[in-house]
View (cartoon, helix red, strand yellow):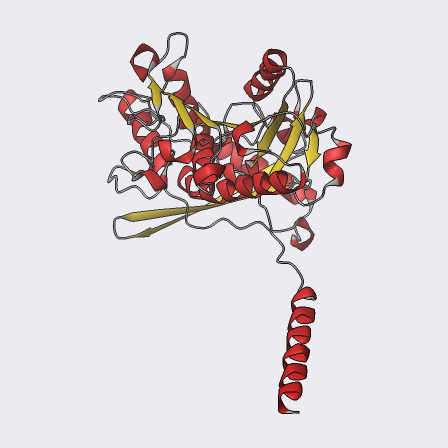
Length: 367
């Protein structure tokens, strides 16, 4: 009788335990980047979104489960655009390999940040890529032997972080690093950057490592099984190095000039009001910029220092942008606060703005 009672009790307990486990909802994986399947074309809008954990998107995008996979991963972006070289590379892969799934990783929201922040985000994007691969391994029977990750700049380290999630017999087949990023990765241990441990075969092409005089964006140290250094790896013929640095100096993290001119065309009028305060050796200036229409989210503020654009000046600015928290004592100007106020709270009329604007123009001299 006691034995029967214990048997019933254990059976009931086991049954309840199994029932409880079966009713536990699965943990939802939240990805901060997205993936798009490339077939043809030269713009991002012509790609098809493959959404991890939604198998119907594989069918909708015509993902071929029997073909190998190549995943292209972009790097840090200064303008938030999907650069044309990505589609040139994707097209070349389709022509050369023919039977292949070419995916493009889109992590621009995490990459369109100050460089140190984007560098830190690369590890999160690596987890996103690993989650995609594990999902394809489960639902599409993708073998890691058939996976080739191609990452540019920060994207090279993203590929390394993704590959580090697969060990032993499940190692990713190949990782190619195109000019792997140097700042915040140079000299770090293998687990904090792209390394030969991250795939069965890792190759890297170093093309912008800079020199002892002029800094570059690429990493100098060996990070792969095979490292290529064309023309020594510093600078490449045909690449205008001065234009690259001048662009960063002049337009900051927003890239090239003129890309947002359509936004400025929407401004009907504006009025700048400047207030000057002094406290000891420090001087502070505050200004108001009012516009007649909603320009959307504020993406950047451009500060122009009136002076000669000499080598030492813009090189110092480049270093400030890359290091973000620079200890350079020659930093001339900084932004303390930026406020954005809706026009519905402004009580000044259009005529008042016009009057103030004319008065300011009469007192200023423009060069």
